Length: 504
Image 1 (tube, rainbow, N blue to C red):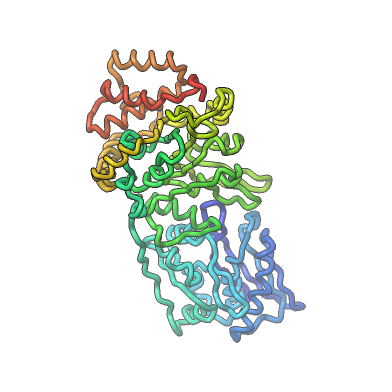
Image 2: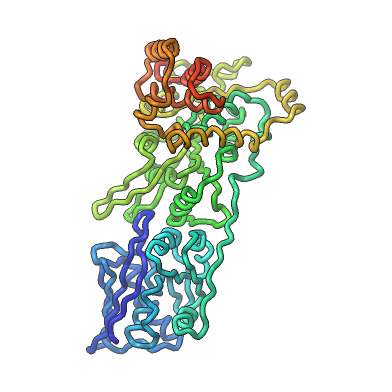
């Protein structure tokens, strides 16, 4: 048989598109050509495959070899096709049986010695392999990650000879058994470590319960970063689907997925010098950015006004839609980006505005220019704005003597509130649509008038109106109440104190 078919997968965003590697060996002068829109690394695979086959004591065909990567209009990149190309050549030259090839999908980069090297993005391929009903043969270094997908038969191999021995029945490969760790956050980052700032902890609890975004304003050293890093510790554990979504994005990123981070919500904290592409993703072959790497987790932006204004503006659409579409001339990639934004900033350039000891020497114009680095539309999309004041030393000493509530106790209340939301509409409050807001966020007449007066006085937008209602609903859920009461609405209104009409 001079024609062989081998199944593999190409990376396309967070999906793995099936690729049929067709190998045909015909009479003629010795030559090898690869067609099907391969990029440079794929074209170079012919040299790696030739050396790997010869060094593994196989015969490389001395005839005309044509390799087609179908579909032909799908760009192919990376060294992932080395193993399927090698298996196709061996099958087409009758050096290995072809009976079992259609039961497997192959992926892996080959060393010149025939050893298998890991590739990026194995988890999306494992997910797609499960749906196709085939088994997956991959490099041993990728096996732990691929096996995270329950139901996928993953067979790790360290050498090309191991794969051939499995297909011929000489020495079957052992199926990889998943051993994922499970947790919610770093156990060292506990809310009990933070002294004082009870109203900020309350705000973080509300934000965690409803998935709301949060902006903290306060002088340096008041605990803004410390508090933000503890938000993942009070969030509910990730579901299996959420864990797979987040893991798939990490798998295709440059850093890859670490199996020990399985089901741990991501916490991303990009530096303020990050570019717009670094935040939302991009590149000629689109890669996920920070907002996608924070999918189902938290993205913390410290020193918010120090970010370039154009960089911050790219966050506006993903914050509403929960996804980002990266378009290039030849391709388009979509990445999920349902992240919870937490930001921190100083009240003025020096950071000590309102300090009782008179540390601040910023003029009103400097303060206004500093705060206006954050645009009104972006501020309008942030659900909660709170102040984080500096605590006196006497208050800190008092708090050290009284143990603070730990993250585990707070998370229990958050989980209960989220369960109420999921039972009601199947989603958390921050993601409610207008029809769902009308059903679940109804107010009595006095409260409706209170909200309308606040809207008129503060100059709030209709987006802010809906956000206040959703925030009130979350506070009521934490309180275990079926309806929104006046105290819930009043507390929600108190979290909009830094809106645009107050020079921010």
